[in-house]
Image 1 (tube, chains in turn cyan, brown, green, purple):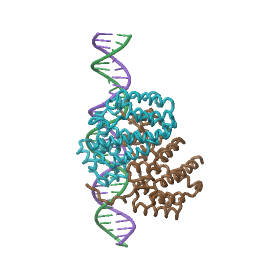
Image 2 (cartoon, chains in turn yellow, cyan, green, brown; image 1 turned 90 degrees about the vertical axis):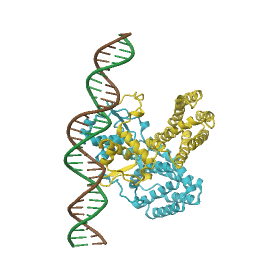
Image 3 (cartoon, helix red, strand yellow; image 1 turned 135 degrees about the vertical axis):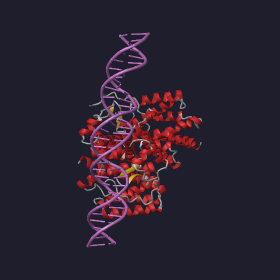
Image 4 (cartoon, chains in turn green, orange, brown, yellow; image 1 turned 180 degrees about the vertical axis):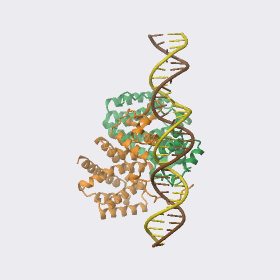
Length: 246
Length: 246
DNA sequence: TCTAAGTTATTTGTATGAGTAAAGAGCTGA
DNA sequence: TCAGCTCTTTACTCATACAAATAACTTAGA
């Protein structure tokens, strides 16, 4: 039953269109909830009625509800039905919820809150990385940085290198929960970054700041790494604000 | 369909024993995975076989799997079956996962990681609270502090006041994602705190530190609030380490 | 011999219908 | 007024059948 070691290269399950029914329904309802089309306290139509409305079986619908319930969005009980829970009980850091939130045109304050959190967490992560990075981490970061410089953030491969760069930093911080937190937020925000790239050039070249951060981590300079990452997040916020107002 | 405003006082759904079957199965499997009884890459037995083994219907079992899948613990595909995902894809900040992790006797490094994250996030939250707290926040915190002092942390009501105190601080920070993060971690860690209280008195009286934090927030002194909360987290870490080694 | 297209078998996914259990609403009686 | 009972609605569980996806195999062709 034990899995063999080489399972990293399995095919990605996110083949977009290949979502199962329960997944699509969960996604649709999740987006609707995050968009406010169903507000906290609202009770959804009954299983039979709603599943018929959505043209899916009760089985598939129920599995979708289980997914939403696992993320804290809804809560179902006999007699009462399934109702949307208070916002304070939503798992706002769940990767899916973050993705859905951005699909639903998130509010300005939500974006602000997320960046406020990034501003708290990511500089600290960079500081830890400067303290704990291994030789392998450094060489990976160096490679990613090189590719970023070569291809630029306008290309798919360049963006992948950017993600790899930041991901390596998180890994170097050697903290699982911290990594889970940062990577889900970053992934969600990056989605908007792609749109940003499409409509306008970057306000300023991000490479110098990336190089400063890289040098700080290589040198093991904790405070410099913290400062450099703070600058990068500030830059990302500026970009995001720009792209949302456009 | 709109919910009425006063839905805060609904009955809590955590009536322990009253868990539905799909919930229990999800919980059991979740704990087993977090305990390492199923490792990343392992593939679970087929639906029919496993559900029979667990003496539940395939429907209930599948709903349990959907829950685990929503939290990133497993991933199922036709033909391949359901397998445990790599740890890096687990939503380690999901409240249920945290709870299950503590049920499964978490590793020392996991505890250390969590407190490292708290050390990053909570002082920052306290700083924000000092900046943004309203009069209502202050009066709530004052009330909670008073009750804490009166009943002590050894009583149920005293601990509730403690939680209310910290919760109000988080609310005062006015940041939804930040609140979701801190409160799930705190809730999970508090579980261990209860055990701690049972076997030994606190290493030192926590009230003075709480009062210092309270005063800082009332005064709007951002840096003092940050420092005071840092001290509180440090204290909590010491307590937790003590209780885990016992 | 190797590659590529097609076939097969296995596993999860979806659908349907029947019956169970929980929990709020209302009724009854004190 | 209130405690307890009944009633009724709703989600929950189960069993069964069939569909869809896909890894593994098989075969045709170069």
